[in-house]
Length: 342
Figure 1 (tube, rainbow, N blue to C red):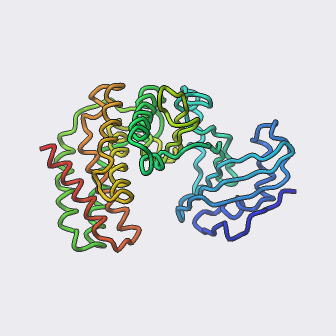
Figure 2 (figure 1 turned 180 degrees about the vertical axis):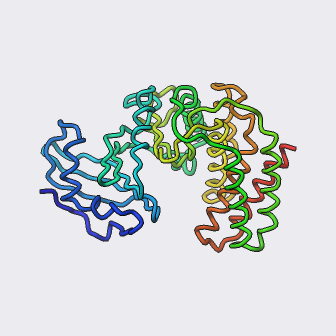
Figure 3 (figure 1 turned 90 degrees about the vertical axis):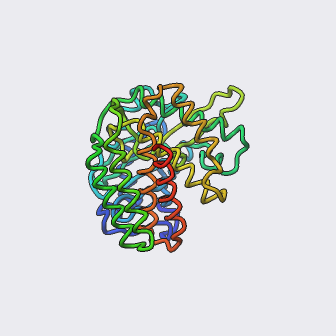
C-alpha cells in the first residue's frame, strides 16, 4: 500500500475543489496511478506529495514523488474544481503536432487524466527556469534565452492545431472595462488613470488589424518556460519546454507576444529595480519572432501590451496589495505604450 512520507502541513484544504482531498489521499491516488503510468516504472511502493501552487477554488498543482520497484520517479499533478479533461486532450494534440518528448521545442508529456479526481498528470520537466536567466544571467545568456523563447512561440503559432475557445475582442473589452472599474473601486486614487487607460484601449480596439488567428497559449511568459540540456549558447542544442495549458485557445498571435514582453517589464521592475531593465531582451524576443513569422505577428502588439498592463494592475488589486505604486506603474506603462502608438 502506498504511504504518504511528507507531512500533512505540505498540503492544503479547499472546499472549492471537491476532489482535492481524494487526490491528496496516497492510498486513493496510488490505486489510480498504475493504470496510466509507464509499465517500466514498476510497482509503486510509496507516494510523497508537495504542493507547488494553489489557486483557491480553481486548481491546485503539486509534485508527486513515487518510490517504485525500479527507483524514484516524479510527476506533476493538477487538480481542478471542474472537469478539465479538455486540457489533457489539448496537450495531446499539441504533442502530436511536433512538440513531443525529445523535440527541440516541446511541452511536458501528458501522462493522463483521471476524471474521478479531476486530476491531470504530466511529466515533471527538469531544467533551468527562464526567470532565473533573466534575473541573474549574463547578457549573452539573456539574449540567447529570449531568442529561444521567441522561436518556441513562432513554431507553436505556425504548427499547433487550432482548438479550444476562440478569443473574442468584444468579450475582452468587456472584461477590461470590468477590471478598470475594480481598480477604481478598490484603489480609488488610481480610478481616473485606470478609466483613462480603458478609454484608450477601447479606441485602439476599433483600429485593430485583421490577422489570421492561430493556436494560443494565453499566459505565455518566462514563468511557463524551462530550458533543459543547458543554456542555448554557442550553438548548443538544448530543449525548450512550455507548460501550463489551462488557458489554451485560438487567438490573435500578437496576444502571446505581448504578454511575454510585458511580463519581462514587470519582472524587471520587481527584481531589477527598473521597468526598462530587460527591454533589450524583450526587443530580441520580438525581432526573433518577427524574423520567423513576419510582421503580422506584431501588427496589434501595442493594444495587447497595454491591455496586459491593465490586467496586471487589476491582478495586484485582487491580491490586496497596499503598494499602490506597483499598480500605478502598470497603468502608466499601458498609457505610455498607447501614447507611443499615436
